[in-house]
Length: 266
Length: 271
Image (cartoon, each protein chain N blue to C red):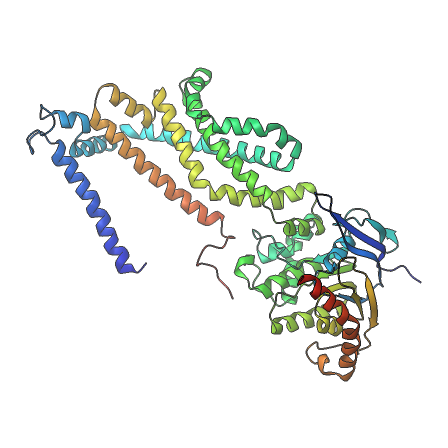
């Protein structure tokens, strides 16, 4: 077996608060993502999905277990990964173009060259002509697209996405999902896509991993999504196979969602 | 505010100004009113000056050009105090905000220095730096420094964790983080306090001049006071006030240019 692009092996994350209380967010989780594979991780809210991504990108050190990137153990930040945050991560003092080319600038690429590539990426995410705008002058969906271009312009081998579209309205969301699939299929990279939305997970992915409710969240099921590509995320939802998969996965998830809900309403 | 309301407000403001001038004029003129409080009709004018003479004095200063040298000196001192204070405050603020050890070490001293009434230092600066511009700049710097320092410190502390993490993942080195994340974030706080710091630089310059100098508007006022020339004192105060207003207006212009990236209330443009 060739080395997985990203492998979390027996990862456990325990947070210790200042008064000594321990909270194990993620427990004994193993997740392998093959090169070019699109994997979604779904689970009830508060189950440690984001924690898992933070471990994968190197922002968090796991308490136990290991992270491997193309077979090599990860130390420090994951240089092969791009990360699309759930919340606003653009630099508000930079224009859209300035934000898109930030990573190129950091790596020392000449400004004119970076700008040319940045403009091309803005075109690609449908924001040609908006390069001079500041983030506060853009709508939420446009900011997400800038963030997408900002991450993808660096051509990362692994793309980590933390509920990137959860704040968008449903139409914008379908638009962005289709755009993401289009960009991804043109140049297949490994994707880990975190979401609480099962339909989103199925319509985008090759594989869906279901996490149990937190604390001590761990994978409780894996489902291969054999829907044909290319897909249109709005249309694929109507396919009989989609509904079949949805029923199956929801069946596995339901108990966990209820558990998480019960715990939160205590 | 509707244009009409704002226009009538303007008239009321002008009317108030005129009324104050009229009361001042009538109250101090030796001939218009019989002395009510003072036994001598000239005494009111001696204590409070006369508005017509005040304006005459200002007119003289500007028509003869004698005031320009003093204004220039005060302006230069203000600008230098502002620039030096801002640079020092920025450097120190960044350093302390990014180094917990240094911050812990200096914390009590910063607090002590900030609570000290620093105008007291003016005579010492006079001894150290002489009666020229340097001592006024030094006084202004001590006032500006703390404003900028605290704002930078706050600005760095309040950088969004997500923005910071994002920049790091995009490959920013520590130096690039400083330049592309910490400094711009801190600068927005510095600009927000621009009015304050320019105002205090100006206060430092004038107070410094007033306490001992050979040039500057503060010096002009000091001279007039020495010879009980109350009209010149008021004329100096008027000139200083107008000067401060102009300075404040320039700062507002600069602010609008520098902070284009920040949303302003009601101006946010969505598409």
